Amino acid sequence: MASTSTNAGLEIVRELRANCERPFNDAHSMPPRVYTSADFLALEECEIFRKEWLCVGRVSALKQPGDYVTADIAGQPVVVLRGDDGELRAFSNVCLHRMSILLEGRGNVRRIVCPYHAWNYSLDGALRGAPLMEQQQGFCKEHYALPQVRCDTWQGWVYVTLDPHVPPVAERLADLTALIDVYGMSSYVETFYEEHVWNTNWKLLAENFMESYHLPMLHRATVGPHSRLEEMECPPGFPAFNYHWITKEASLPIGNAHPDNRRLEGHWRKTTALLAVYPTHLITLTPGYFWYLVLQPQGVGKVHIRFGGGLAPEFVEDPKGAEYMATLKHLLDEVNAEDRRGVEAVFRGVHAPLAKPGHLSHLERPNYDFARYIAQRLAQ
Ligand code: FES
Ligand SMILES: [Fe+2]
Image (tube, rainbow, N blue to C red; front, side, top):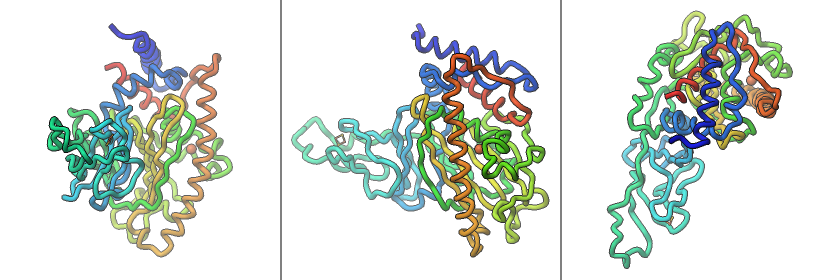
């Protein structure tokens, strides 16, 4: 029998589904409780976070043997490592002795050494050393290996999943590959990477990223005045992602294709793609640079953010590329501060007894598709 909390979560799912059954031209934003309910988050953890591919960053962060990044998937700490044999592998990041977390953040190690009693593991997850355990005849270190987690790459990104059955990322995102392959995103070079925690629900930040309707107002002090909403196209999304296009000449040179860029032709040379790969990978992809957010919920009211970006290869070569990127990073920091104020204010708003969802604009088609994705995953 379902527990009371599961029932509470399912009741919110029903409310969301009813909301999602409206046609797009009468669509409303998601009901407030999808952002505030711990029971709803518990369902998201089971049905979304434990079953989907989740991005953990760029492959280029894991170039050398021993390079690692850590992540948390719905309570399961995971480490992704480049092995001595050059292979990428992901493991449970929990010690096999008394279950301490092993590695923190990102870095490079020769061995995975537990910070508690120094049990240590080679980069393929095998237990190699366990100090002073010889007297315990029942202990045999050969019987210990870190549980492996699935790991895959796509377009220069690393993804992990706890689900043994979900198809490979390239298959899940085949439609997206077809749409954006022309940019050659795998070859883009990351030039900055940061981590932040904001006080909002993860979906509010995802939704903020996937619509440009807020640019003129929320970003009125930065990019708003240059944003023309009539230059945005918001086609219906696909099962695993949504997207929209901005088709204008960029004000900064790195927003358009570099003269040496032979991959992009015609309108592509000035087209920006805004991609939301469900559930938590958000990318702005332009002909000359990219930036991204990878989200990880920390309870209903906090979201951990991986924030990175960089340049297309032609701009890496260009003597002014790094200078342009520094200018852009400065702008992105300001824009992010505005977005933070925006999504934290919405998180406060959705708790109000009188809060209720209003109509979506035609520019919020991705939000409609995202809501339907959430509803559909949780209804399984
Ligand atoms: S918990 Fe890791 S060595 Fe004891
Ligand atoms: Fe924004």
